[in-house]
Image (tube, rainbow, N blue to C red; front, top):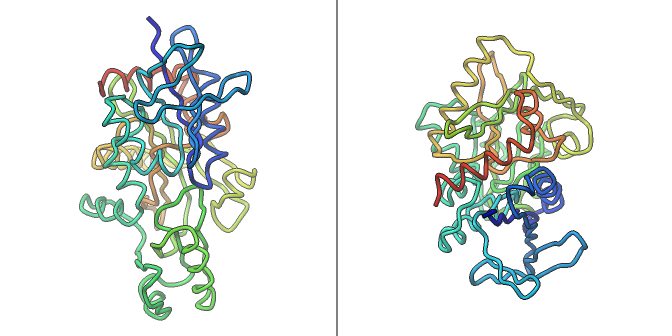
Length: 327
């Protein structure tokens, strides 16, 4: 009997529309012969199943079910493509775990840690993972520009602590630019992390569990037209993404080992995309995305295709791993 698969998309963050694109790609490529697939859209005030005829059927939040043609449909698994809250910060994962419904992303605790840049870096420092120097500040703290500059130098990156797709990320070149940058970042989250500038080649590394084994899909080099890999560069064509990255075989080996070390240290499951920048020839961790973009133009799908995996194979593998490991 075919399994009922809910493809969770949308969410409550600025990345709602990006998540819809990811979810639609999964819906397009996930085999209809193998699975019954349903697009479940999350909005703050409304969860609904989005049918092909554009009809919207409400989701029963008490048991995560829908009623279609007088028949109640329960889901065997959830393919989680939500970027940001509630699908990438642990809220959806905890809800589904209470209902004993497996889902493709990492568990709720790992999601909460990885979505919080401060906490994620704190965990990885215990594993001697190289990172930028950072300075932490909350919205009600006194801003001391001199202390910030003494710690991280200039230029520096001001980042909203819990955000994705480079929302609330600003590069500050001068002391005078710090307060406006902090104001912009605090509009996204009440916590901010300020990081030292790292200069070098930026790369992004995708990982998937293939037949139960965490496997690096590929290494992509990011070449941006902008000052850094911001929203425009990511989604509006202001960057070039080169797979495989133009790095040495020694650097490739080092990055592969470091990526899998991070994946295992964080007790990851499912897809992950980890970003690094080479500074003085050494890869430094920037961040990890536990629900990376899955559109055909996104980095992780590009890497899968280069590796010889079709998107149908990639997505089906994710569902089967989820059903096997998390029931």
